[in-house]
Picture (cartoon, helix red, strand yellow):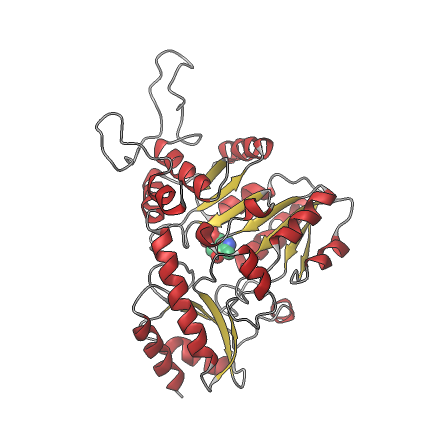
Length: 381
Ligand SMILES: *Cc1c(COP(=O)(O)O)cnc(C)c1O
């Protein structure tokens, strides 16, 4: 079946007890057993919960995966993936990375003896220089956050394959509607379901999908052992959000495109980062691995002043100044002081996140109102 049908139906059957069309919120921690060890597959809710199972099946279906696991947050998902590694193992990761991922890698897992290399992967062949006998995993984010760089997932998959590495793609920015990394050769795809999957800024959740049985078993074992599972209410909210993922993404893409072009011709704007521009450095790769270009845009203003960026980001009325992305409402953010504040300034600037960079998560409001809002905010001097 095609995407929209799966988004609405996959993993979901009418409730066997009542016929309820919506998956019930199974707010329970445990399940009654017939005799010790004899039960219907559910023993304790850290291991399994029916609302969560329905959600996992739906996300797996949208990522063309055999298996999905859901987590209490995107970071909970990443933490579980990192626990597949052992002290001494090495990871090569995209340099333009979600700030929280960078913080977890360098401030938590580095202490457990895991070594990280941060590489500009715009030319995927550069990854090879950082691979050695200890390398176990490639961590790729594409489009990258916040510079909207595009990494060639097929090229990364072939490098991973020839060196026997796992390839993880953080697919949060694209969502499965725009990009399916497992189809391009990734071992695992990871989501902050907080963003486009949930889509309404009312829940924090993470997900990992894979077609590899062994990796799935190990991730499920770590999850059940360590416990970063989402609750049934949150699982219900994301399951409901998924039902409109395709319609929301179409609207995000349409508005994103108009706003990217509006910003590009504005006299106060220096540079707009959006993979849909034909002169984006990896536009051809974006076209070959994404179905459209999404609603995430970043830009710098002429003069590159932090003060002016602050003024602009504080002057919008429809765009709300907030962390996060992927909800129906438009958000504006200043990465250097918000989402990426945990990355040291020198490291940040090396990868191109300057003090005047502003990031937009374009929502699905009327685009005339969004453009009008940006226009008036750019006029504030
Ligand atoms: C938000 C985000 C995360 C972390 O997810 P949480 O749900 O906030 O824990 C990871 N990667 C990307 C790209 C994100 O935007």
